[in-house]
Image (spheres, rainbow, N blue to C red):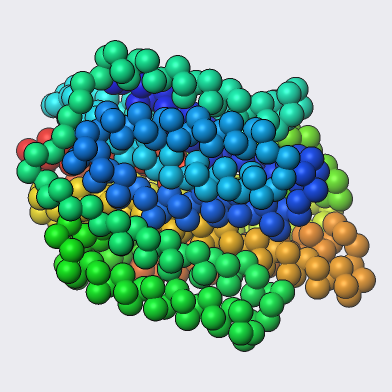
Length: 488
């Protein structure tokens, strides 16, 4: 019971924190004097670091003790919350969020491992279902709680409360959770791969964020992409030589796994990019002028759409197969994005509801089957590695798309303002252009879903249910033992 309490409460807090931050950004910007364009790194930096460390943190738990590393993740999360809450500058918030990315990834990776080794059979199914449910509840509650706290205590209140809850998980873990390791796993840890992933993503995201201002063919942008390319080549070289690679390149020969992973990356990127955009748009005084709490309420249709579609996934997969369900999900998401392309400065909130529901429900259809396809495409011994690739893809998608849509939104909006458009029309034009990018990405997902058509029809497991419900938190992995019980 202690392991269930510690892991479920911690994942709820991590996901609530993740989903709340976009709601807090306008208040943080006003309080610290930092522009929203700069503060988008509080979102992308979190995902960048998470992508780099999520697999490594799981490996550290296997070698040195899952409880020990889980406790380290909780400690790091507490420190990051305190650092952010005490920070009087945007730089401090961004730095704290980067640390929080490492902490959140560690908590989630080791939390799922602790659940997997402490339960089995039907008990494991229930535990994974509860863990996924906690992820979904946290993701849904985050914007609402964040909005309430901004109005009542200031934006710092969220981080103080999160720190207190994480601190309460420490004695529960110490007293009731047994230590566990994987004695058969190589003690080699691919730290070089972790650093190289960060070296690929950081300059690439910097180029995406600053390209419009620096010039897309400027020395700075081209230099960033060159560094990312060199780091990518070095990553491939390292992964071929280390005993326990961060990414098993051998698995990337499987076209089903590739198709599913790209689908996961696109779905996580689109929903994270959209939620970032609308959270800011809803609160802007020139458009809807919602309070932080009202903006949190306004995002509920997306969360409800994700959760409502979850029970439909197994039946659809059984009848149609994984590939067609993924294609249908991306089609719905594309339709939602296309509707938002026509946004005007005088739109009221009601006009956003249908696009939000379509997009979120569509991506809910994508994420569960894609998670299932990514793990069912490989042998039982490779399920953990495939799940690690999927989790990394979620973080990368969230970071890359948030940076890209923030740049498009700001660039187009500023261009329209310089041409004489009013503030509301300029903001709507920026949102429209960014949603066009998301529509193209979703449309590409429909085409790429053809790569997953060979995935056999199968019942989607509870880990995938949680993944579908909390896909915009991009945190739910699928326990290999739960999948094995399905196959039996």
